[in-house]
Length: 399
Image (cartoon, rainbow, N blue to C red; front, side, top):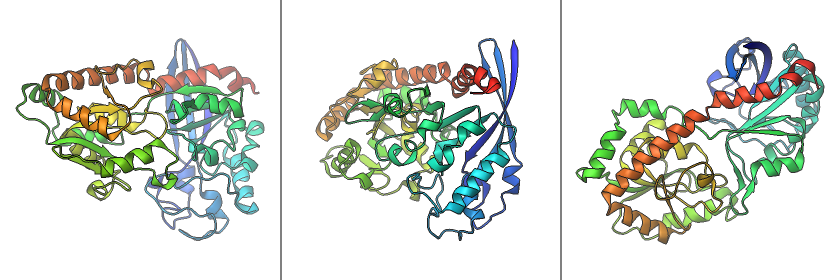
C-alpha cells in the first residue's frame, strides 16, 4: 500500500476558540499553533493529512474592528455568523487575508475553506497560485444562501464536498448542476449529514432504547405522547420564496384537533425548545417522546434532521417530489411515509399511522436499519479519502 503525506490549511471559524468576534480576545496565537492529523484510506492508498488552521475572522480583528461592532463585523452567535461574500470589506481586511493565506499556507499544498467563510473573490482569485488543490465544503445550500456565500468564489475551487443533493426544492435544480454552470471543471463529493451534534450521546444520557420504543409501539402499551413534532426554523426571512416557509406557516395555523402536536423553533407556534433549538439534549428528549415527525425542506431532504428522526424512532412524513429518498434506497411506506405537501394530507397520514401500531413499529425498525447501512456504506472519511486520492497527482505535481 502506498502512503502519501500532505499538508493542508483549513480556513474556518470555531466559537470554541473563544476569540474575536465571539469574544473580545484578538490573540489567535494558540489557534494558529494547532495542528491535527487525519488518516484516510482509499483502496490501496493511505493518505495522511496534516492540517493547520487560519481563523476566518482574524483579518477583521487585525484591521482594528471593535468586538461585536463596526462595519462588516458579524454579530456574535453560537455557530457560523452570517456569511455574505458579496459585501466586500475595506482594502485593509482584504490585504490582511491575502497576506495570511501566503504566510500560514506556506508549505501547504491543499486549502480547505470551510463554508467559504469570508472568502471574497478579491482574495479567492489568488488560491490557484498558492495551493495545488482547493476544497470547498458546506453542509447545506439553497437559493439566497449560495448566491451570496459560495457562488462568488466557486470558480476558484477544484472540489466541492456537499451534503445536499437538491439546490432548489421548488424547481428540482441539483447542487451539482448549479455549480457546473459556474465551474465546469469542479468535481463533486456528496455525503449525507450525520446526526446533530451530540444527539446520540444525549440519547444515552436519557437511557433511550430504540428497540424498547419499537416493542412498546408494536404492543400498543406505551404510545409516544406526542403525535407529530417539528423542530427547526420556518425560514421566514425569505418570505414565500421557499416551500418550507409557506408550509411552516400553514403548520402553525392548521387544525390539529384530536392530535397532540408540538412545533418548535424560529417563528414556530411553540417557540424555542428549551430556550435554544440547537440544544441536542432537548431535541433528543422531545424526539424520543414523539411518534411522527415532518421534515419540510428548503432545498434537499438530506440534512441532520433526517438522521435525527430515524435515530430516535420517529416516523418521518416527507414530501419528496424529486425522488431523493428513492434514489438513495429509501422506500415510501417502508422507511418513511410520503405526503403531498399539504397540512391536510399530513394530518391524515398521522391519524392513519396512530391507528396502526404494528405498521408504525415496522417503519421505525426498517428506517433505522436502512439509515445505519446508508451511513456505514458512505462515511465522511471514505468520501474524503476518495477526494484526496482522485487529486493526488495534482496535489503532488501542481496544477
